[in-house]
Image (tube, rainbow, N blue to C red):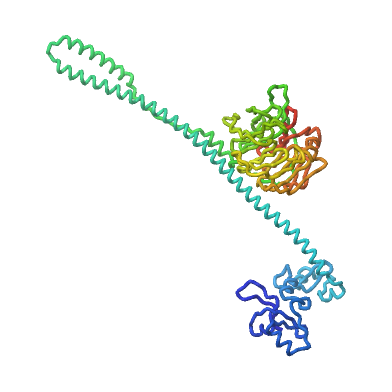
Length: 559
């Protein structure tokens, strides 16, 4: 029988069955009929004379493919040995429950007692349910597709994260360059000031010396002119001027008797070079899965100064700039505190009303959400700048709705009002209302954005829920749990780890990035965290910072 399998010439498509008569004429024509008695395949054109010649033969079209033999493509694929190229599976080892080719048996199954040919083995076996296997394959394919999609998404996320870090590295290098440029500018100015001062002094000496020289020459010429002319008055004046000029000249010569060569030297501050040379890079590169569970270790409490001292702090939000400085929103005392990396207060800035939330919007800039109260009329966003380690108020953006939560990502400002989530520009222009839930005054309470800005996490304090939204406001997931009692704050780490404070449960819950699954309960004991409001993970100190309501202490956990 002619080959029943071929490829279209000039094409990558496969012809599963070729017309037998056409194949004898070296033509690859796709078969559309099969004759079981002739065991041959026919195209439409060749089938007509075959049917006329063999009227008792029944031909099966492609609608009756179950009557056709298995294609050579399928046979080759199924019988191919996965271990040995070019070998076909013809044997079965019942000892190892393994399909074998002759090479497999020779190398690995010579001592096995139950090796038989597949035709002999299947004589005594029930028929395999191909459709059931197909169903299982389809289920498995669905799972594989889901994993593949997740892997591709993770690969893109990882690439985006690398690009973001690359930009941060280059920005940091530019900061160092600017610092070095400033040091160079100051050092050169010092050199120029010294040069100008010395040059001015030397020029004054040269000018004075030249004047003395000219005066003496003029006196010499005057002496020759006076001669013996007996001009006593002129001779008297001449004598006095001679003595005065000679005295000045000798004094100047005496002062300049020792020839001093003035040179300028430069001694580099090798401490700068030594400091830089001790480092292996511009910083540390860390990587971590968004679902890697944070493990809390030792707890340290840091006291926060209050004004007046009798007032306790209520730290309801925390953020950290790229230089490591930490900022706290002290709601009770209407202020923002700035801490160094040792958690010591170095500056504070009073606000016009209660501070509800804050976030970083630039290298040295913060956006602060201010609100009188949940039903108040005063609500705005206040920008704060850091200049010389001091907090300075910047532009104020009045808002037409409450400002309860705030988050920022690459120029996009997200603000929650208690009942809605809004997208603004940094200039304060409303882009759109992304999400709304008017079932309660705190149903859209606090918010946080994932590092890739593909998810926005929102706390529904009224229903004890965490919502995960797409950037267009679509709800992707809603999470609730018996430990998520009175949630007040949500934070996403640089690695994409999602943390939610449960105030009444005295714990912090870590979620997966999908916002659908609880990964861990952090600090689940009341002696570790009591009434937590805000939380922040610091990648600079590898610590978990927890803000407490009505407390003068900030909790810091090593992780």
